[in-house]
Length: 509
Image (tube, rainbow, N blue to C red; front, side, top):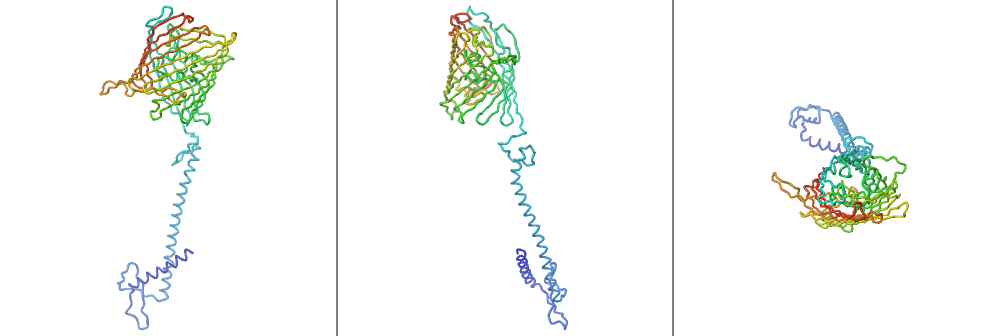
């Protein structure tokens, strides 16, 4: 129907054209006597209407010629229309294919097939081309410890220099939701000052899977047991040379082999974590051949009742509670502590206790209020003694710090090990020369800590430490501690009082 209408319109157009061309029709005045009508001809496109020569055609021939021309030109136009329709159809097909190709590309990408123009990958799809992104680092701490005034009753009070930490670290992320950490030590181990030994130890060696539905973060390997705020805060972020008396290796487990889960609310004001671990696998030996491996179960719950978001945590209040149950692998439990230095004599010791298990609970508190920070924890442990029921041990610490240069302690609501303190940052890094000067950050500090083993015939140990830290940057600092250990009559060397000075240069990358 469209073609018929078009043909009628085309014929009408030709009639109009013929009428206009009539202006250029030439009449033959030199006609023969037999012709009653003049003969007309159509001018070609190259001729002027004023041309003088013309070919005379009979009327029937003229009509036939007109009809032939119309059909020929109509056929030519129809062919051109067909070509235009094919081109238009091709454009539509390409556009539709392009739109459909977006979905096809996403589907193909999930199978790893490379596309010429890949669209944005589906975030819910597994990326089989993902790889590890690894960062190498290290940690160096150089200590010099001097017994400024050692009690005469305490032996082995030698001054010493030591690499407190000399470590290599590899951190990595990859495969959309995984991370890992490997940390090996090269420093000498702890013990008496006269014992010189060093052995590579495994500290961190774990793999984490993040954003797991319902569970949050899952971790496997060797890492900090989720228990105690001071314990899970990395050493580079704690503000004293050593952790307080009752935390590391007393009531709070250090790193252990096992697995744990970590999670938090969307606002990160509540966090919870827990795990199961082997009991005290030695970091140096890295193995245990025993039918009784022992185990540890831990749980930790924290709450931020106040966190001032506009200041990014310059003002906050942290609380927490935790529990740690230990089924001892050799049925011998022991609580002992040195002064708050790495190497030196043991000042308080319960001795080996015949016990198959013990359970420890703790309370956490921390407050950052601008330049001032307060942190405290209390511990209590119930020991299942094999031959005399149960015995209790307890301890606590509290410390306060103040930045003279205006900074504040950094708190991570859901960090590497859950709620923990982070790396302190000077407002201005320390610098001298080349047209730059900067003071770094200056922090003063004081801490009291306590370990009470009276119920286990071990006595009581109190310690007061004061000092200051000078931060050159967020990764370089000097630390100075004046340590004053005080022990009761029931402790290893009886009632004693001493003074120690501990100095440290600490940098990491």
